[in-house]
Amino acid sequence: MKTHCDAGCQKAFEVESFKTVNLKDGIDKLCFECPHCQREYVAFYRDAEIRKLQARIRRVQRRFADPNDNHKDAAKKEAELKATIKEKMDELRARIEERERMPPSLEF
Image (cartoon, rainbow, N blue to C red):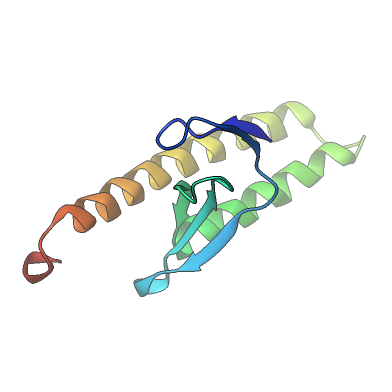
């Protein structure tokens, strides 16, 4: 995936892989770094609930390979799961970023 370092050195680069960092409370941070200035970019955070939803969407997506399955129903379910996952990821990101802004003595 081609991108550029918009918060750092401004150079273009190819994202070759994502790094998974295990945070506390069973939360994973998936991120990548600019190879020029090492600026970290967070793709998303996920917890147990989001991992479970991601597994469900993979099962739904496998239905598209079956020509006898109801693809319209599968597409509807996929869209619902995508929306739920996005909502949960946005909530988790906001919670984590809020925690990072707090002084250590006020962390929840």
